[in-house]
Structures are given as structure tokens and as C-alpha cells.
Length: 70
Ligand SMILES: [Zn+2]
Image (cartoon, rainbow, N blue to C red; front, top):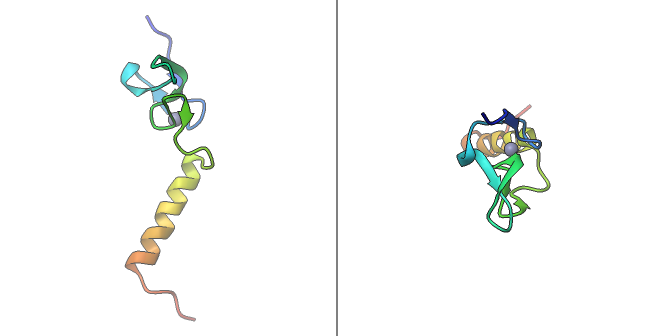
């Protein structure tokens, strides 16, 4: 049985190989999920998952709502 793994970047459980990130040589990473780490590189090296969520939320606000007026 494979031991349970979690992404060391975002903390997501890596349930099976389809969720594992990939190394530059095509092997699976056991440390990171596919959303964080692909082909030996971090997908978003500057951002944590929480920061990405925050940016997405701000973008939505800017696009869908007029600026708050005091
Ligand atoms: Zn991850």
C-alpha cells in the first residue's frame, strides 16, 4: 500500500498518481501535487494557494461590481 501523501506546497492530499506533480524527467513527484508542480517546475512559484484565491476574489470584485463610494 502506498502511504498517504500531501502536497508540501498547498497541503492537498495526493490520492494517487494522477494528482502527483511531475519531475522534469517525467517521473512523479512525491512531494507536490500536479497543481503546484509540473515538469520539474512550480506552476506559480510566487504564490501560495491562499494568495491565488485572494487574487481571484479581488479580480471578481473589480469586474462585477462598481467601486465602493463613500
Ligand atoms: Zn499542491
